[in-house]
Amino acid sequence: MISNVKSLNENMRTKISRFKVWAIAIFMCYSSVEALNWTKPIYLQPQFTGNTFAINRNETRIYYANQTQVYWRDRIGPNQWSEPHFLVGEWNNSHLTRNFWIDPDEQVAIWSDYTNNWQLFMSRKDSVGHWSSRRPLPSGINTPGIEWWGSISPSGDWLYFSRYISGQSGALLRARYINDSTFADPETLAFGEFRINYGGDEWVGTLSPREDELIFMGYRYWHNDGRGEKDLFSSLLNCNGTWRRITRLDCSYDKQFQDIHIQSGDEEFPQLSTDNRTLYFQRFYWIDSDLGMVPNGGYCFSKRIWSKVSPVCSDSVEIPIPGLDEPTPFQFEVGSPDSLQFIIQDQSGNEIVQHADTVNAVGLWRIRWYGINDTDSTIVDGDYQLQIQSDATTDTINFSVSAGDILLGIHEERIPNTLRSFDLVTFPNPFNPTTTIRYTPPENGRVTVTIYDQLGRQVNQLVSAKQNAGEYTVQWNGRDDTGRQLASGLYFCQVSGGGFSRTVKLVLIK
Image (cartoon, rainbow, N blue to C red; front, side):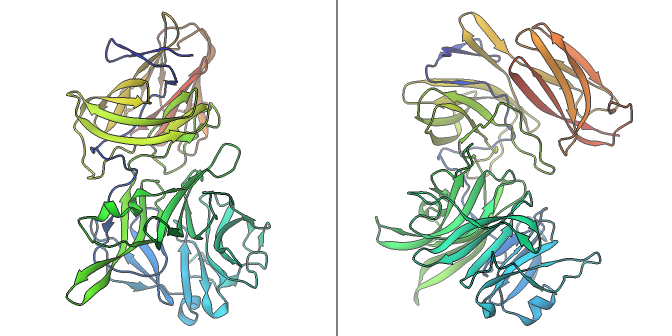
């Protein structure tokens, strides 16, 4: 069991007894004192409403169903959107289209048509950008009942959709995608107390890019205040493929809106951005006026502050996903279930942002900080500290912010007087034509230094050898393992050895 942690930035030791921390970085920054996962929502301007909602990969165009037809708007400012444009397609002109979804690359559309008993249909764009005639999804998906909404998962492997089940109302299902006319038999997600599809009406799910988090709209009856509401919920995937207990998103909490309205509202139709940092959804609420209580609201968005704590399913480094610029996670191991506080402070001890979460099993866990708080304020470059607190212990990690990147070094002590570290520094970065990679294996053993492109493909292996603990340097000239000059862009350098592994970004410029 680990008993000491020593930071690179300060010559200090902090006693811990239940968990150890060794992950090495996060990303960007802001400031807050409330333990929230999401910022207070901001309404799109001009304010408008509809049924379901989707956004493209660059978050420059939104699609939404309004009554029976689909429209789109372009972003014309930081939060300003154009006038609506009618989506041209045979199926949008002649049918009653509801519950519309389009993929981030704007090539595949799925929707339900309530003139056909809410059955699901799909259409694809052809090579010149025209939408094909609508095609009903196969009978294994479209039952004689009601299918409200469907979407393809980010990997393209699954169709997620909602179905009316007698005695259950709306339920979330998924079916493995084979081709546009063939799907495997659907499976219902996670029945069980406080799980997905338990005691409520589940509609409209959106998946994180790694497909390990599902956010969905649920109609739940809240006994503490005697009313039913549509709220947004989240569930994380366990390592064994089951879904964890659901939690209500704090952007659904009424306390987030105390300065906006006085009555409870409904949150509907969530849609995650492809970078996993922004959640778009629709919010309705009531305001007091001379005419009495009148409805208001529309489409809005919230920014992610923290991820939920999630289990680490293997010791391998996550393979980068193209276009996904993720914060590097903190990883820590717990010896027993515990409630934890994560607090970031500046050099003067002022609290910048915090988060509360619970780990329910022994093992390795992960959390990401997305560098913002509920006011979306950016912190200045400098030195900061992360504290991880349990009921009885506190562990501290010192890190620095420089030009938007967080630089973090940790020494871990597993046995008395044996400090273990794994530092990885590259300079210059960005670079042309050569960068130097400096690393310090913490123990004797085989070490590999590998370069990957944005698709996670290995392009060069600079080192694969047994090395003693100590400091080493190796240079990379921006070429692959055949000597071919690579294109400018983003690459990843991964150094592994002795049970440790670290990855940094490299930017090759020409």
